[in-house]
Image 1 (cartoon, each protein chain N blue to C red):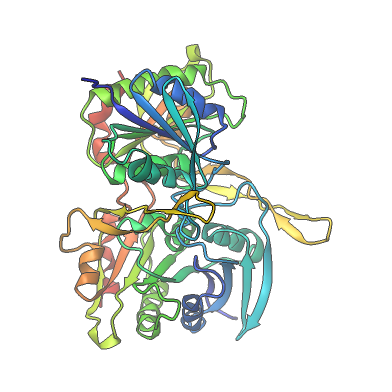
Image 2 (image 1 turned 120 degrees about the vertical axis):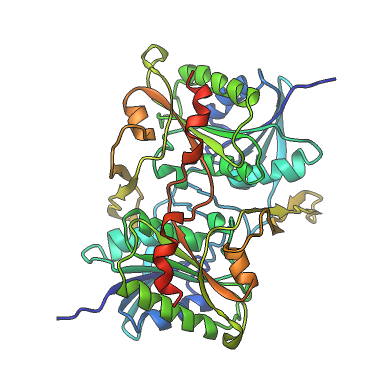
Length: 256
Length: 256
């Protein structure tokens, strides 16, 4: 009997991204892989879903035993389509998202389509991991990343994982010999500070590009940003209860 | 000297939604209001931002001293445009999002554009509240909601709030006399169970609609869902550190 795990691979950079293919190359060493990717880049799509239009999905490639689908939907939709349409009669053992071109550390986690897909899988207690390399280039070199992706997939499949969590893995843009190892981290406090520079189109109308940089508000040891700055792969366990439990009792003035 | 608070009002249902106007009617009793709303419905847009296209924004109405802008962006973009373009020289005292047509309790919080806008404001420690009425109708009656919105705005402006949090306010679909009060709550564990029914277009090609229902996995007293089921307005304090702190030490097998 075939005991190989069923693995769903998704991303947010779209079906043509080289980070997707890098992840598939590693994943298929570990199980039966199905790919579902957006039909264009969905960077920064957060936990968005497609509600006002129907979803389309199409098998566009079969290669090395892997079925590749592309969809009109978001990264989160890819996970829903995987569970409810493409693999609806199968138990999914692992959901992998990425490898994202660019960082998803600190609050970038919340903007990230890559991580939203992993979080979506954790809603139903599926094991899931989102991978990001700190290199925005479409020509990024994923060779060192693949070593760590392989190691982390091996550990996640071999171990019981805590319930209802996923992993946010960020890999520094360094050659393999300069990466010092893996650290389990917490989310670095911070925010994105945007410029929103005003430009004018040929018709004299203004427009703005969202561009900026991450500002860390408390750059302590143990955070994702600290690990990456110091040459480590950051692995942050992520949970989706966003309640500020510590403040429930102090807000009782609102109940009066 | 004018001491009235500067209030930014945004939403995810778009600039024509009646819930937006209901929120503005209450908000302008409390301060100087500026409205920035998406130019169409952005329900379910999560923490999505606009990265692949430039942002457009246009002043489309002035009424009762309120400037109304609409934008090509998402709810989160509305907050960024408010801070960096429209109100760039002013301190924003309060960001209000909604009133959403439909629930944002349990994990709907993560799919919600309404709440993402409030969370975005909390990244920079602005006071912010997202409001939702459990009524998806575009003709929803916001009269009872407005009483609670008024009360909550009053309390939030009058008190020091905990740092880096926002409030997720959900209001039951009940007449005022049947609402039993306000409860400070925690996020109910659960997930959305979708059908993804297959249909075929006139050309024989399949498509799928995302539709489903929330499944609560632990329907305990004290959660948002419990409060709403029992006739209370649910006020959940929300924070954006998604680290599963309790599992950091148990994942050290990955560091090896």
